[in-house]
Amino acid sequence: QSLLDRYDIYVYVRPGTAPSPHDSLPNVHLLEGPLLDISSTFIRNQIKSGHSIRYLVPDEVAEYIQSAGLYK
Image (cartoon, rainbow, N blue to C red; front, side):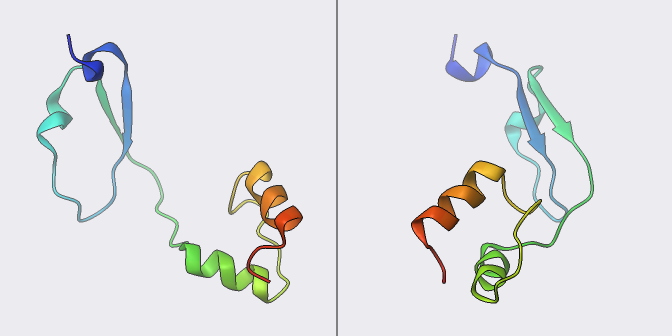
């Protein structure tokens, strides 16, 4: 039994992405939802401009970025 067979895997489908041979495995669950066009460059620019990144990254990530003074 491979590692992939041991766990359920959830895949957030992105438009235009080619299907994977793994998509048909019984433990692979394909999810669809809204696609947010947010890049890491956008997040860095928000920080440089002094704008909030709340809701763009997990709170723990935002706290780390702020405490480490990253992207200022």
